[in-house]
Every structure is written in C-alpha cells, then in structure tokens.
Length: 452
Image (cartoon, rainbow, N blue to C red; front, side, top):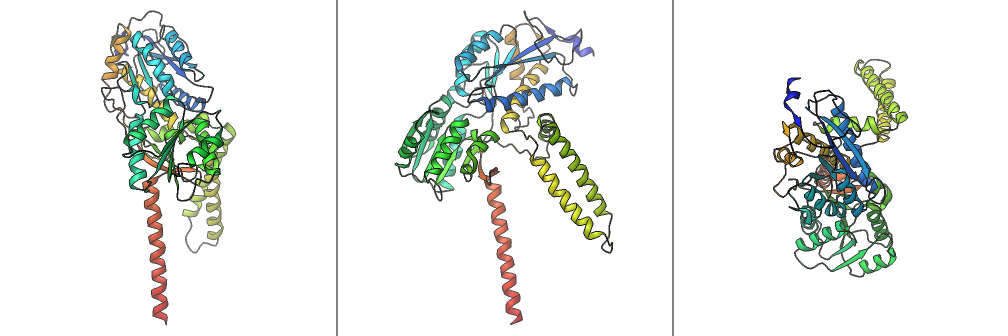
C-alpha cells in the first residue's frame, strides 16, 4: 500500500515486544505499554481493562482496519502499587511511544509526573480524581472526573429520593477521598458525618459510627472488595428499607456485584452510559466478540447450539397455520428453546464497563496514530491526540477537553434483583406496568357493573 511509505518513525530502541499487527518490511513499528493492576485489590478492574485492550488489538491484527504502522503492546502488572506503577512506566518509556495506565487514581497520580518528564502520552482508562484534571499536557483519561459523578448523585439523592441527612463512608485511598470530597462539596448543606476505613479496619466499628449519625442516606466512596464489604456490613446492620445506600460506578462490575450479593439490591450508583444489549455499533460487535473470546469454550458451544435450536424452532412455528395439528407441540418447543437460549446467554462472559474503557483506551492510541504521517520524537504523538474529534467508542463518543478530561456525563443506575438497571428507564417501565394493571382493574369493574 502506497500510504505506508509516507509514514516515518525515528525513535531509538523501538523493539517488538509482542502482538505485532500488520507486519511488513516497509511498515514502521510502534510500541505501546500497558501498566495495570492485574493482581491485588484493584486486579478485578485491571483484568477487565486488559481484556478490552487485547480485544481491540486483536481487531487491529485481524486486518479489519488500515493503519500504516505495526502496533505492539506489552501488558505489565503494577500489582496496584503506585510507586511500582511509576517505576514500571519509567522503564517502559525507554521503548514505548505512549502508554495506557493508571487504572486507579493513586496509580495515575504517581504516573503522571513520569509521563510529563518523559514527554510521552499516558492514557488512563478509569482514574477519576479531580486532581488529575490538567495535571499534564501528556495525560488523558477516559473516565469522567469524580466531580461529575458526585454532582449527578447529590442531585438525585436530594431531589428524587428525598435524602435529608447524608453520611459518607470513605475508603482511605485517593479514589475514596476525592470522591467523598466531591460529594461533600456539591451536597449543598453539611453532611452529617464522615467515616474513614481501610479493608483491614474493624467493619463493626465503622458501621456503628456511620449508623450513629442517624442518616437517611449513606454514600460509600470505595471500590473493589472494600466496596462490597462495606455494603454488606451496612445492610447486615439494618441500613435498609426507606434508607438510601449509594455509591459510584465502581459497583458496575460483576466481581464486585457478586461479592456484595443480595446486599447490593436497591443500591444506587452513577456511571456513564454503557448498554451491553445495544444494537448500535461499535458496541454490538464489541460485546459479541468479547463473549466469544472470553467465554469458556464449552459454554460458548452450548450457546451456539441453543441459538441454532431457537432459530429452528421459531422457523417451524412460523411455517404453521392455526389449523395445524402439531401447532401446540411446536409452540411448546419454541418456548422451551427461548428459555434454553436465555439460560445459555446468561452463562456467557459479558464485558463490563471497564472492559469497554480498555477497548476505547487502545482505540484512542490507534486513532491518534492514524493522524500522524511523521513521528520524529515521542512528543509528536501529542499532535495525534489533539486531532481526535468525536471518536466513536463502545463507551460513547470520545472527545477530550483541554484539561485531558473526557467529555462524558453520568446517569443513575440501581441494582434490581442483582442486575444494574437504568433508574429512569426502570421507573418508567414500572409506572407503565402499574398503569396497565390499573386499567385492567377498571375494565373488570366496568364489566362487573354492566352485568349487574
């Protein structure tokens, strides 16, 4: 391809690490490093982000799009240690043009000075601390600032569910503190109390202090296992019924929901829009590809069989008329096939919002690279980043502010029967069903009156 010859890369030490895409003798190679917590308390988020990155890289390697560079990535485990993440990034920048990293706010805050000193771009998939806004011209993030989540939730708690007395339960981390600070700033009146805890804290003491404030709403500023444990402890202590429990998008991942169990039901949380059932692209293809790649092979095979059986049973039913003697049996088979398909689909490994953030983080680097014809020094990559305008992503259209923050907003979700649902849509559906039931009762009353 002629356009490959127009691209030049003059970076020392640009070595192929792994996962080269589109290899060719005339195509320069670009290395990206991925520094994430693959183990440790934040590992549940890091693994999902890495899965999304890998899926985006696989798509590039498959030749589904044209790019005039070989792209190579290396995933490095930071173990959730901010100092270690910064050190690993410093080493990685000896060969990498740019990096994805800073899954947590603690890590991102430690990594930004490294990126700034090296003059190389760092893209964070999920760090939310307000301190990161405008921290460096080389730093970008795909997750909205905690101030956005805080404003959305504070307005909801006050205006929609009538919380008057709000208490904060705060994990002792940069993420927890910044989120709690943001909530406190936008609450409008003083919160009635604030309890700080660590995963090793006495949970009973934390709960008793929180309940002692006699709040009708508690906001838990935490993530991972700490979030799940705090939710469970508060529910076990009786914080339920008409009392409101709320948190952030850290709850929007299966591992945390599973750990919290039934205690998570009716918890409110904020998150940007991410609908795994959306028919729109690129989300639909992303979800389908993720399920196929990361689902257990046996479960995937069972899903394919159930899908084929559902199609067969549906076709048979559609080919019958009302007088066909086998209609009842065909209907039963079709209903059974639908149920079997639903069960098989539930067994699939469905991507979380964090997998989507990983996919889009890699997409941002690829998008920036596509804008560049010449890369003489690493800082040239900034030109590509600044050229990104309304880039389609699975977590929404991506546009960055001058501060490096993504232009996204959050909405309210609620856990219902163990699953996250859009609060507004769920409320509208519930009202619609109640209205239908009311109308049926009215019709029954009218028929009964006519028959008297």
